[in-house]
Length: 371
Image (tube, rainbow, N blue to C red):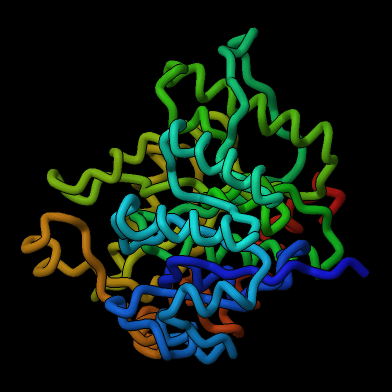
């Protein structure tokens, strides 16, 4: 059995908590240290408290230098809470490399700094990997798109901060446990650490036209189908599916639209922010997404993030309030009896029920022999 490298994650915030819950999906590393700036309020507490979740057994630390000595590699993540790269993050990268630690970086870094770090790593006999797609993508030779002949599951969110990645990982773990071969495209740059593909870079770039992106993504998934021969494909749709309002547009849901035009899902899970919804809200979302994206939402997830209007207006950026999972459960109970079921992915029994519901949905298609 290959020994896993001890990994430090910096800067840790609740956006990374989904990975902590599903560390068994990581084959090469063992997450042993989580470090956050002291001002974020996570240091000294169990990682689970950052997301108002149960204890994980990993305590968040505030001293990067001390934690560094107990690890062999450092993952620098693009946290939701932002830090000054030049003043805070870059010096810690240098400290890690000169301390003979491998580094992996999800944060977008200028080419000049990439080169400097790579040279320093080489001189110190360690690796320096930037977790981004370095492939040069060309315009597709053909404009036609292909049918995908195996089941596809979409995981989408009305906006960011809606527990989408938690859903993607829970689905993956359950399907693998059931013995299915899973191909997957996720919404984080470190998805490869968890055994699946990150979203290809051309989706976010401007070197291709929007129609070319749609065609190329279809070809990308078709190639995956042919080469990996999976039983099912899970695709996480980046960003939100529609603008939040005229000020906070979530990129107008353009990326979700493009992916939905490239691939038709066989099942779709839509996650929404916490709010005092009436049943009509979910009915309207179903109709809106069906008309806009062309597919039916099979079930909803109610996130434990609520949009914070007051903080958003004062800070001029989207802010959210984190709620206890019990409040989410209570809200779901108040909405029971709806035609489209609602789950809370943060609760283990709800997670199991959601995965079973999706498996049953796929199994209802007689032509899908794998299910």
